Length: 311
Ligand SMILES: [Zn+2]
Image (cartoon, rainbow, N blue to C red; front, side):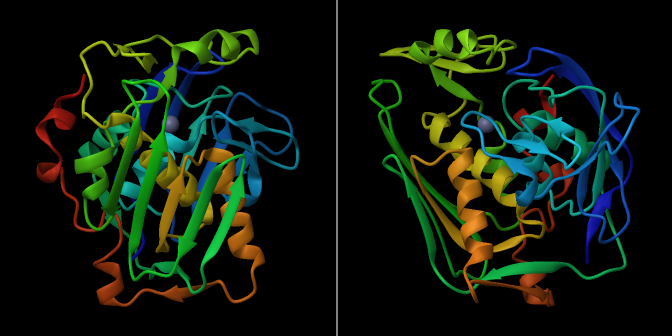
């Protein structure tokens, strides 16, 4: 069955790129509503933005959704990953600013907030997108692939010149609460060399190294408390991939492979998947399939203590 939230949950804070504060309220929604954002600070015209791949404006550093009226919301990927990872299929997300609060740079606080209120089962079956053919896209030495699989698997490979990052690879079966256990607390990261360039372009204005982002500079790491996992960067890339894949419009059953891929390339992959005849079909979940969905069966007590306690 489809799920929604048991009760509304509120998050407040500045956006990573705009630096602008926003109050965001995740509200329960009916079956087949899907995930939609609503800009409550915009009074005129259409302020609703569906969280779907065909509303994505492909930008390099975050995922930004824009509707036909030009109303947008930025950096949706971490909250989308949390909703997908907790098995929430329907929610209305009201936000009074242009960008989702970055909080600690990960999805941990979103997961904690959602699971503290709990997830409610609705009386309509879940439809899933079953991948039937391999589809692959490449750009500038990066590659993203999706291939048939009876569950959602995410595999990621990164390779950075910074010694503190280097080469990292990880593969995860997203069944049950794997996202909450393995990925949700891994934070946004960047290279010191990129910070000034981003800020000169009006990006990362809300970034605070060690507070909402991990900054790597050669062998140096500015991370506040220290790294949460020795391979925190690749885990964050997997978190981003889950958030971007959640924009497919229904849970995906397939194996995603990201090789140095980013937000724009994962969106290009979804566009290619839907444009390839016979590559994907929408099917109603049977009991066996439901048991393999991300977030299915995740309960508060199963969330790691460190995430239950995050301030
Ligand atoms: Zn991210």
